[in-house]
Image (cartoon, rainbow, N blue to C red):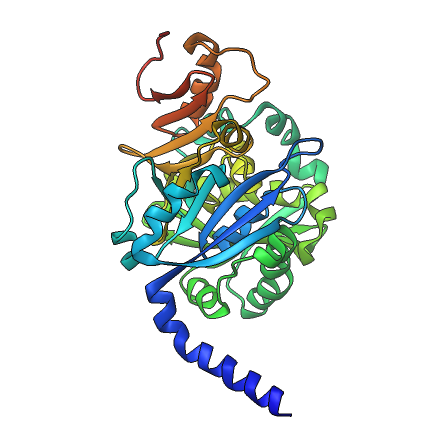
Length: 373
């Protein structure tokens, strides 16, 4: 009984001290995991907290192994990172504005916790469709009649309740698990009160929906989901139907742009890749107020392994910049060899790329023609 009381008092004391310790110190956690079956593990340093860092830890094929976790005095963070650079392939940091002012080590890059993707609608359906991936164009041939999908616009509160409880939340949980960063019901309701739901139905029953709001000539898709987060609906094309009807609806309403919403600042992110198939380009998300920093470690071999599989979207000059790497098993690259890849990045809306190769870091301005050398 006495031990239990002492433990409770100690925990209460820790909770009271937390606002002070979190201001004066920063937590640093080193994790180790495998990026692909058969590969050697790599180590990543996570500094700070929040769902973004949990998702970074979730990039490994299995739950990451925590090697150590310590609290660092905020003014000493830069020195700590420099001294431990041989311990990690990359350090990802989510710092408070106060801590960020104390921290500016050389080689550190910055990005926002989310990126935005938008689809230009000028030119009509045929022009928009021409920017879809070839696989997607084939899938959309006679889509409505062949697959039995239809859509309707709803401002009914009962449909909003179904969307929240049976579409948005289950889909986020199915996709991100414990790392899901859910928008509150109050925020969703505030958006719904100003907008509406685009409900996708199959044979008369709702299977997916997008929460939309109109701002001038821009249609913004804030959140979406499939019924019960069931992967079977995705395999049957419910998510494809949702984007198809969003584009059709936006064109019918005379909008010049579809805001497809936010995603993780990783080119490997499934949501980012799916939207790119529709021709959506990447932009800085001005709705995202928080930033992250990333710092490569000393082992450029391990840094290359991470960046080759998970290129990172950062803030660049006049737009987004990609931090990527040449795979270790790739032959030596020249700028000519890189042309198709750089062109693909340019089509995604990226402005610069910084690529780690056999010869070290190489920078490319994607707004200009690429020349060899």
